[in-house]
Image (spheres, rainbow, N blue to C red):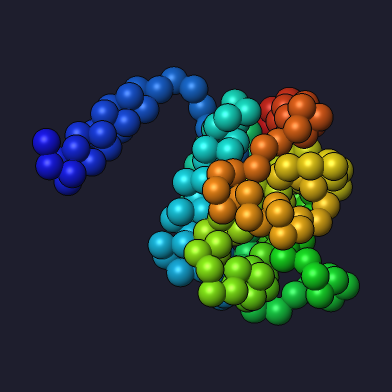
Length: 192
């Protein structure tokens, strides 16, 4: 089988398998803003975030733009991610993003993509770093806390070893991270 036919067959199988999937999406993520990643980087990062959350039983869906006011939402949680050219006031220069876990309106997460590009340098790390930044900040919103783990996705500050590791394979959520995410989703489900 030729590679393009194999890819098309695989995609058709995935779409068929998920088309009738009765499980609802847990989180809908809206991307907006004026300083986003190149399309290929963003698509790769989204796929990695889907995989990372999927490994802990959380289903994600992505939209471009902002959620419409008053419209019914397709998931228990809605997270708005804004790509900004400038960091909001008070955000440290070392921060790649900021989450507002208790935000009821507006962008709950602000990503400074220029900073991610700078950290990545001339490597192919932009997509894995963006994926981890998104997963980290989305987890804060779902957990409704500013909790940080000693290792993995929810580590407060990643170092060179972490960036090397995330280029090879996604970092993991700790058991505590997963418990906090699930508890947050339970609260969100009850409040809907």
